[in-house]
Figure 1 (spheres, rainbow, N blue to C red):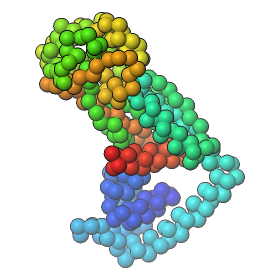
Figure 2 (tube, rainbow, N blue to C red; figure 1 turned 180 degrees about the horizontal axis):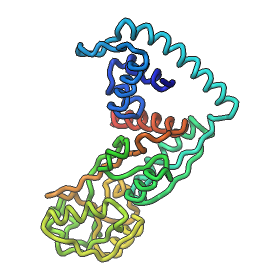
Figure 3 (spheres, rainbow, N blue to C red; figure 1 turned 60 degrees about the horizontal axis):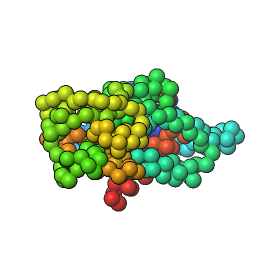
Figure 4 (cartoon, rainbow, N blue to C red; figure 1 turned 90 degrees about the vertical axis):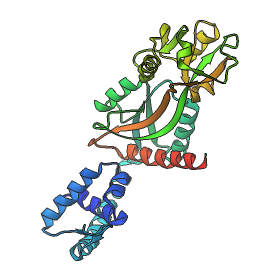
Length: 298
């Protein structure tokens, strides 16, 4: 038995739910269930009556909960004293993000966090989702922002942007006056795309194949502003996330794509069963709360 067993027990008691406690602690439901089972085996008693619709503490569970809360409080006081001694309100977070993220929204989020935690510093690494996932898995990054789907057996995640990919063309293009266009209508177009280090590259290829053709790719880049410049120069068309389209500087036209539409969902990921620093945990709690508020108010 260690302090985590007691802390997990306290959280399950607080929520009367293994699932809700697991979500709050950023772990899986099977993990927390196993921890509680191990605690029950160590103590030789059942802590919860599982026969009812909602989890209910047994008599032994209520007694042990009181002691567990006392122990946890003492442990928190110890952590606070150590934090004050070592200045652990300071911290460092390594975040990987793709160049195709809406940097304005992300920087607003980062600024809000910095206002609340001014002593925590950041390392931001721009790369495609494939490389970001690899770096998080190899502990080169603490947090990654990637295009869904991700590897759910390796990463915890929460989605925070859901939008569609749009067609971007110059005003002189024959399709420029249309409200929407079926993907198959782009069969003869020259495509300007992100390179194959980006999940979006694979997603577009797959969608075009689904529509019955292989796109003719005239150029690839890792930077959306270069793609914008090439489209503005009438070198070809591009498929870009809606949030990026909203920040294009050149006089370009964006058009909805159908049959099929191409979804673009971003999520924040972190590795399962990996130690998370105080700063990283605070970042996750802060961003989830902030992004949930933004979604509610939208």
